[in-house]
Length: 387
Image (cartoon, rainbow, N blue to C red; front, side, top):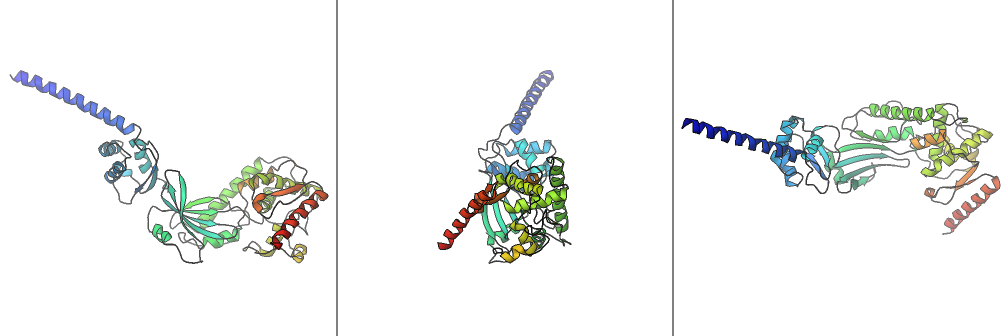
């Protein structure tokens, strides 16, 4: 009798172990299998949250097939205590294993709301925007110019959230003075900048920051990026250039940056200035005259006068030959690369095609061709004046 009971017990134990093994194998497959999401979602993990709460949220949103398997898988892989607060983009079809990795690997949030402090050539703007997981594109919720009008309620709302991301975006062609002055107004940063960095030595780019980050350290990062870009471009420069040092290349790049906002024109504009330098001709570019007047402290806001075109400043390339003594703005990577690898053309002149800068320029080899292009531009100016 006891032998029969023992035999039946052993059989049941074996069956139980077999079933348990099957359940474990099933759970492992479920944990690693493609998930049910047919569209990406943004998962918010509040500070102090737990893996249990996250699993329930994911199950409620149809992102996982079993919150139990999700929790056990996270615990088995020793990731439960590594849960990070933030907003995370969970892609379409993500497995439970992939989601656990997303919410525990650390780093910045990958979706949700962000505040972008844009430092532009003519003005600064604060933009509140949110990532749409379906399109993976940001949608603007609010935007305002600091110091002008009321601050939108959406800005105050997102500032209260611990997982809001912050970004500083520098436009190509801003001056170092503009950057320093605008950084003083960015309320998530701390500390003083100190001296204004040398003109041209801040890389126009997007910089993610956190509340309490140092202004001085951010500026140092901007300088490091620009130094790296300039060094890389200089090492791959074309032979026989009239610019003989990285600093001269940076000066020329800043002029190219201010003369055209059309990406496909940068190399052509660079060729015009290269040809002029090689021929010993003055560059005769208006942005250098403007810099001699403003010293990069703000926007001139009007047209140049004939007296200013003739006025002697170190930057007035209608008066001096060669390059001015410093850059006139902070050029982007594309303009730096154009300065050291200009297109191969015979162009000596250029003038705007239309009154819209986005339409680019007409280029010319001879003065007669250039005068015809200038006459066409003057007619457009006259038509606008008559209208």
